[in-house]
Length: 158
Length: 158
DNA sequence: ATGTTAATGGTAATCATTATCAATAAGGAA
DNA sequence: TTCCTTATTGATAATGATTACCATTAACAT
Picture 1 (cartoon, rainbow over the protein chains, first blue to last red):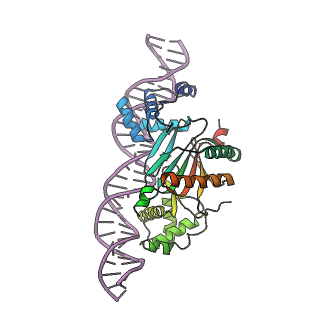
Picture 2: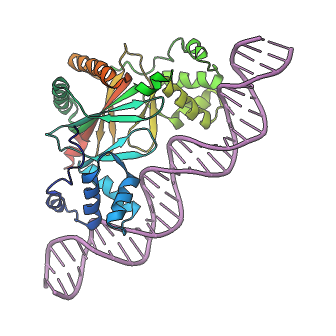
Picture 3: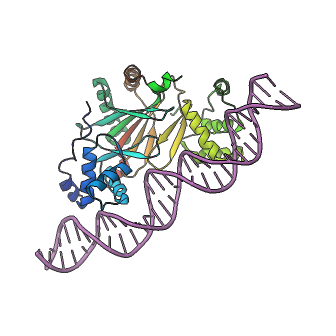
């Protein structure tokens, strides 16, 4: 089962946002709602289309701008999967570490987004996180493990 | 120290290539040479400019096409770092596993490319590789650990 | 040496993302 | 509540990386 999708917008964001000096606007509400109800990674255009259904006055520019803002505040992450457009997803709701894996087939260019880490793997990633903070002064908020290789289907075809 | 850059093109590729039915052409030689001598990830344009110096007849289209071919054959990997253009790097020369880490600052959008894995981390990644093969039929050729968060400089400024 | 055909490279087209800028609305102050 | 300041919006144009097209060239098998 996947705990990353369809859980609604992060609770309490309006207060947090206002505290930062940002305004809580209708487009921002809508976009966060769309992201919160997504069942998968969405592209900017998909987010725009879904937002448009809820609020037809919205503009694509605002979508991009809002996504940018949300990225900078660590609310979402941007995923570049090599298909020419980026995808976005809510981040950081899973107990301090949000990390999942992408299997990217270099042949057919499809990618599989999986989310199953073993205990060992989670432990190592947490350790790594601490190490990066100590060594590079970098605070990790989320991570993606991108694996490049060949998928099942492409192997069959050979 | 970094063992990933400046080591020259992968040995023996012409034979391997011809075996696949591809032709070994001048542009392909040049591009592989440029990639082999790179001291960092290069963008397509950088690869084009460096190739141009060695062989002015080369075209940008060929660079893109060749990079694509090399990706499909697992010779290089493409890295999308969120700056609007992709970067490329020779892959798979380090004993079966080519894996490095990117620290991507969601605030200033810079990224640091590091390459230091501990023994533990390498062991876990190798295990993960096997697990992905068993469970998903996916053969991993290389991987990148993308960490999102806040860099040292940005923290100072607050 | 020659013919077949993969590969090339100039140019035009595509398409995601950004910049511009006048109009609008969030939210603090009166 | 009403007003004011200014962050935010959205339509449109611009940008810039990547891809499509197609006539020409050059690998390399014979």
